Image (cartoon, rainbow, N blue to C red):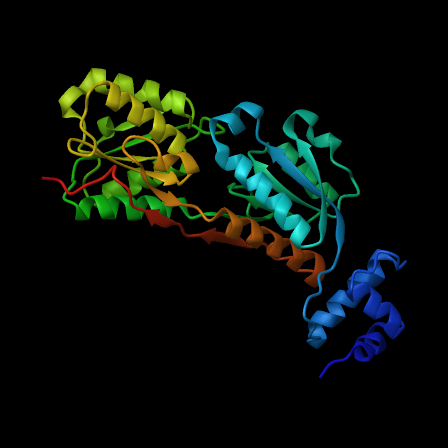
Amino acid sequence: MITIKDIADNVGVSATTISRVLNNDPKISVSAETRKKIFIAANELGYKKKVFSPHFGNVALLYWVSDKEELDDIYFKQIRLELEKQANLKNVSIIRYKQKDGIESVDPKSSAFIAIGRFKREELLYMRSITLHGIFVDTITDEELFDSVRPNLPLMIRQIINHLLSLGHTNIGYFGGYGFDTNMEIREKAFREVSKEYSIFKEENIFIGDSLSASDGYKTATRAIEKYGNELPTAFCVANDPTAIGVLQAFNEKGWVIPGRVSFFSINNISVTKYVSPPLTTFNIDIPLICETAFDLLLERLVNNRTLTKTILVAGTPVFRKSIQQLN
């Protein structure tokens, strides 16, 4: 069995110092390099202790989500709050920066960063000049430069289409939006690819709003109903819950029977989806697992000096409610 003395012999400091560092004694004064060596040695030697977690400070949390985007979709706020919770559990001190502060506001001595949102290429290169240790949450970024963990949205889209097909729906449409930028959004791209694979793709069945919000979902659905009427599909895949809430409102106002005439399957499972009319069938995204995984990636880099990048996709879980049914 590996003891504290074994670690002390390996690192070259006293057993007392080893014990105090592993127990996160706030009064112990050792260099960051020595502290890091102690935790690396403990891990490599297989030291077993009920709980020990290295303390890492000055980790930047880049929250590149505007106030409006956060209001439109509570999902981003949930991620931010969960990351702050996980930081406390993982003994990591983080400093939050907002997009309006500018990338130059980030402390150049930051040991690592966790990022939410969309970033310009020059911003990525700026962070790369500060630290190699970057983790992106729910963002597709340069996978050669940084780690990322995100929900497996293409898989969820495929599962939605498969389920709707199993219920007899072959005329399936899509409601979405542009999100952070004007490029084709990952869910829309997946919907196009999977529906083409199953030979059910129709360009006229895809409806894209200016954003992934309830207001744009409502506007887009209203225009679709007015233009196509009863020619609309019998079922829709919707990019996210806020968009779906707006879409449901538009169809309800126009007197459509849901799910008798049209079914809806969404993604995110925000709390309000169980209270809309009808309650929304949606995919649950495990935000705590995603955020915990982000910190695991971070600690792999800071403790074990991992340099190769990782991309982790986390599957979702369908939550079946009353917005879908078998096609008669």
